[in-house]
Image (cartoon, rainbow, N blue to C red):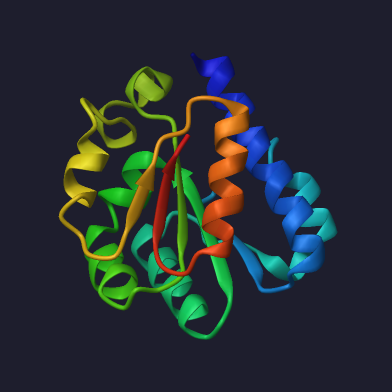
Length: 165
């Protein structure tokens, strides 16, 4: 299962690199994760990459501000960090403003067991809390092909999107 997740992550990064070549409005924000995935993106698009560090609430607010200014931010971190830790900012800044923020959540369940509850989800906790928010569409691709199809579709769409890899 972990290997499949890594393939989906690579599919995401490859898509973003390909898309950012023609779209300087694409901005990748990360919460100090994604190492061994983002180096190529960082090298090619240094002005389109922001490592926000471990300030998830602020990262979501920055993404909302970028989106409301016409940019296309992609926020990437572990699932609890882009859904639970910053829930108020996701709700108020992104969803209620219908901001064009694409949220990529990775890991959860057994992937980060050694870190404890703060880094993990149980029984679709992320989807259970997100389904109550306005304007957000949620996707859980299972294959690389499905991931790419969803990324292409949602990159063209306006409004908040959550993709769990």
